Image 1 (cartoon, rainbow, N blue to C red):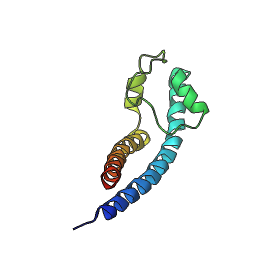
Image 2 (cartoon, rainbow, N blue to C red):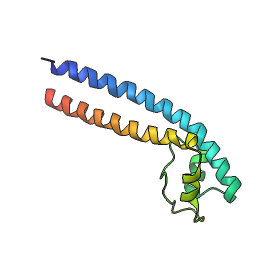
Image 3 (cartoon, rainbow, N blue to C red):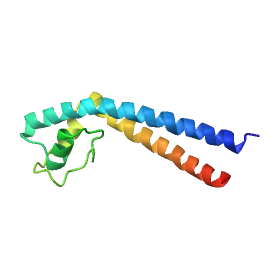
Image 4 (cartoon, rainbow, N blue to C red):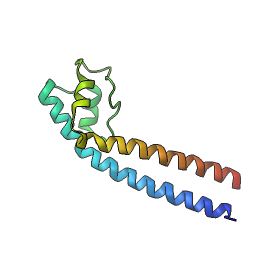
Length: 117
């Protein structure tokens, strides 16, 4: 039978390497963020306030994907995001689902550590 400590070590490894992979995915998504912002500026003139804050800092995710920002004055934001090429938006979807999987492993790790205690 597999010991609790082996399962715990495996979960620690999965969460650790998953965190590293998520960091690299966010780094790749960061490049796409600026491309998307430039396309948005060309089409609508200026960025919404919440996006402008991420644009001037170092963004690692596109908050509110496919949702209307309450700070935007344009009514076509959602249509713009949906009309973007898949090669620009696919990384955000991959990052989102991979983050959910790693979060589940983290919860299992926390439960294992509680059980071992």
